Length: 243
Picture 1 (cartoon, rainbow, N blue to C red):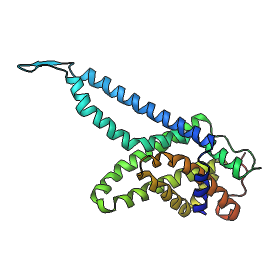
Picture 2 (picture 1 turned 90 degrees about the vertical axis):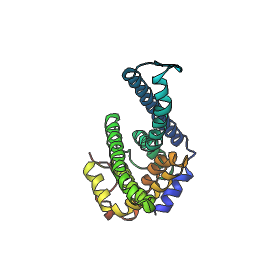
Picture 3 (picture 1 turned 45 degrees about the vertical axis):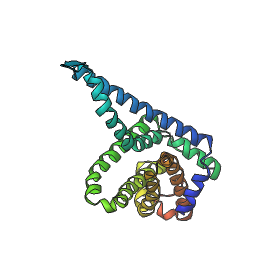
Picture 4 (picture 1 turned 180 degrees about the horizontal axis):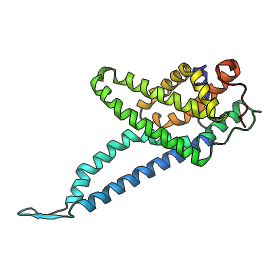
């Protein structure tokens, strides 16, 4: 079931709505990182003296030196660490577009899904981003202490987070918060495995940028497959949105 859901999601990667969400997510992510860097540079310029003179050496641009030797490497490191969780959070705002594209192609005739409003979407995205960053920063200690199995720990931690988040978000399109939570609890094991499948590509450069799109599509397929084949495990009745 999970393998077929992921395969169907990958097969639809060329969908223009998938590509549109990818472009919007990456654009917003890059814009945020650039704003962060500009803010960092502005703060350094305010805290440090612009330049000073040394005998025999002459004028030294302290701000430029700090930015070049410290600021830029720190920015690049933070970008590498935060690109994926930030992009995932931004793309989560546009989850409906990916799920709609999947349902239009593979599950025609469904009643309209519950719309996730902009404020609700931003709140969910911010919460997910905060949880992912906080958990991975704490887990960084475990990665260092147990370096030989660090990849396994990374996949397990992020697999749990992705499975929990995507399972909840996809179910929320068809049910209220209580129903979505019931679905997630009833299918926790399957959602965890699917989350691990999504977490593995996070360690592959470039490919990891596609994970939010593939994840949203895969979990949409998984939700409908579970609801169709084992409705008793959905935690609620039917697919129609709650009033």
